[in-house]
Image (cartoon, rainbow, N blue to C red; front, side, top):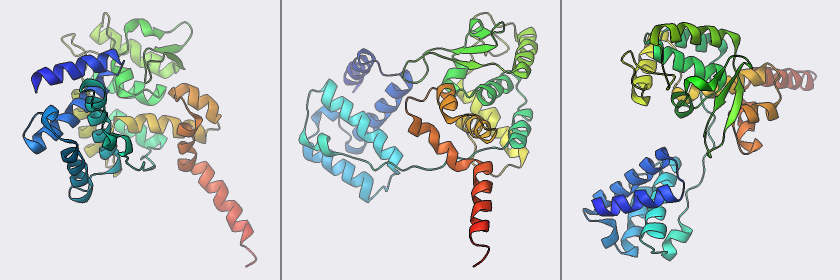
Length: 279
């Protein structure tokens, strides 16, 4: 499996897939190999059909998980093994659109305030106040903070696109205090010994803070980004502006936040009350 794995990783790099995507695809193929206890290049098309039938009928995997398994296995057989089997053409997973959990301003303030690691606290602040993905926050360089123009330069975000987002004054003040303590040289978010902050460390301290906060929502790093977008929308910021801030390719992706704003829900509720008042 090692030689095949290396070939697949090389192919994914040549296709320009992000490191995170590469890791997810490799794990999907590893699960396929583990199911049959054989290298995937020794499997038949029927075995591939049986595997995905097993995932749907017996494992009852979520739609999002099934999509990941399909994409990873498809890449291996289509690109690396050059086996464009008919089965691969009709494998589909119905997309589920779920509204993500969102923190209001007070909840976000309370949660971030309970993070005890200063570097992780700074990371969470950047994700919430600038709408960054965890990978974007951890990828920030010191030079990406432009205090003269009050912007943060996000380099090679999702889709390998650069963008700029506004830098709040309070966030800049916190960044300066953080810099005086940690003195990062190149990578912005680092541990006390100068090593780059890791996703695992951020998630660990966020989870601890969530337990202390009393917030009963299912919160992840990405929740901070969702909350940024929703809270801005509640303040009346145009949805197209938010699309640019988040780096969304499609406006359709951004409009999901319209369904979560309390101001919108309240205004609709008022209109419905007036509509039905004389019933």
